[in-house]
Length: 159
Image 1 (cartoon, helix red, strand yellow):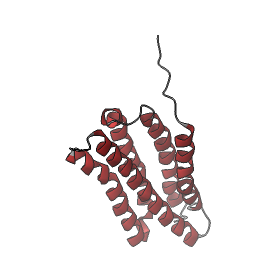
Image 2 (tube, rainbow, N blue to C red):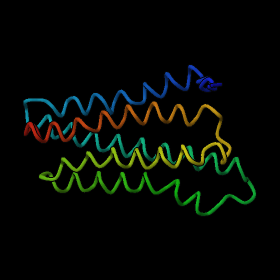
Image 3 (cartoon, rainbow, N blue to C red):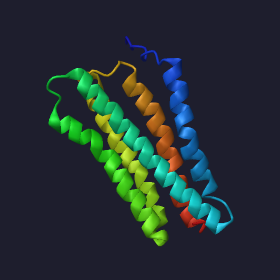
């Protein structure tokens, strides 16, 4: 078997990507606090930052599309680049307005997964660097694992 080595991941992209996960992880860990108010504020911070990350990923995809076809970017691709971020903001609004439903913040795991699937299937065709899908796989996996702390905090009745 002739297995192809994975693409080289630029160190800056990898380091900044992991650094970008830190606020998500910290806020998710703080939802495990014994103090309910602190845990609830952390869940709101988690939701806000998750929505920011999804918006950022959508912006990356929008930029890739504009670079792919500067004169005629695809309207569906531009639209789909905005959907995960908008969904993230709706989940955040729901978490803020309905404190009893704060556990729904775990929905962000699904939103990150949906963004990853689109990135994985179309990023190279859209003009992304060869290493981008692998970077997205690593970072999305990390984000989804972090998202699982929210239902854990809910079960432990922290929030």
